Image (cartoon, rainbow over all chains, first blue to last red; front, top):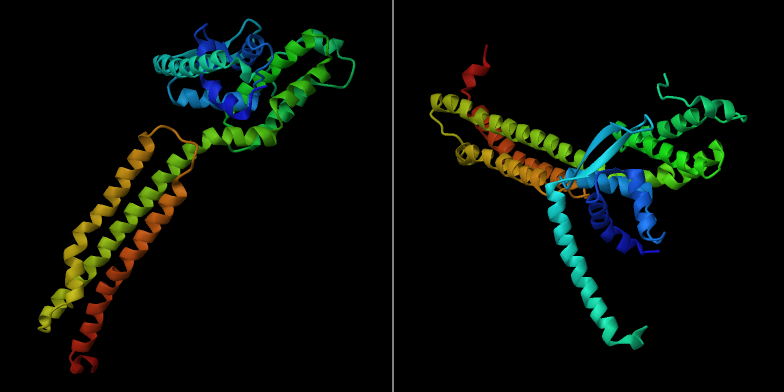
Length: 112
Length: 211
């Protein structure tokens, strides 16, 4: 389980990254992240939807109500140009944290 | 009323009294009562809970069990509300800024109107061979500057409107500042309008009081 702070920081890059696989809706997003993380990242609806709406306000993503195969309407989210830019920046930041930690943990294995 | 497609199999198969559509409507109605949930948000939550129920049913749970688990996962209304409020509040914040700006500008215009009152009395003063009190003259000359506070406030509001969305509501600060400025401007302006009145009463010839 991630800490509250880490969940807050990682939600936007995770949403953006999942959306690079193609458009999707809220429920499927939660499922996809749960599946990819092996159940370690469990998003709640109350947390995800406000973030999605905020990202939409920020023009990172756009949404559209469409009828699914089941005949029910779903709100699909899609990546926008602004979102790709944001993802690019997020990637660099997460990679620099990752690389630094990896180096530190490699040179000092006694830490763990 | 309920236009959602019902699955006939689900209805027939369900031997208990549980009605998914009715229970879901009740839950959604509670969400809809909150001012932070727009109709669209409620529709999205409905779509989500229905997906969740479908998934749980496919794992062998009954309709009622699936529904209870789905809404429990979605979080109680009390837990969802503050999360949604964080996002929707910023809109209310922007609109309230606009209302305060309109009120403040009107207030400044009103105060400017009051500075015209001693100007009207200047004619009467001239007839009596008197001048307006120096303070009133000063305020009359400074009156055009009353355009500055609304312009500053407008510039601030434009900044608030175009800056990246923030979850903080900044209108209370704006409201307090605007009201304080209006109040501080009103004191000298009302004095400037009042002083020539006293002056006039002093200068009115005694015979005019006689019929």
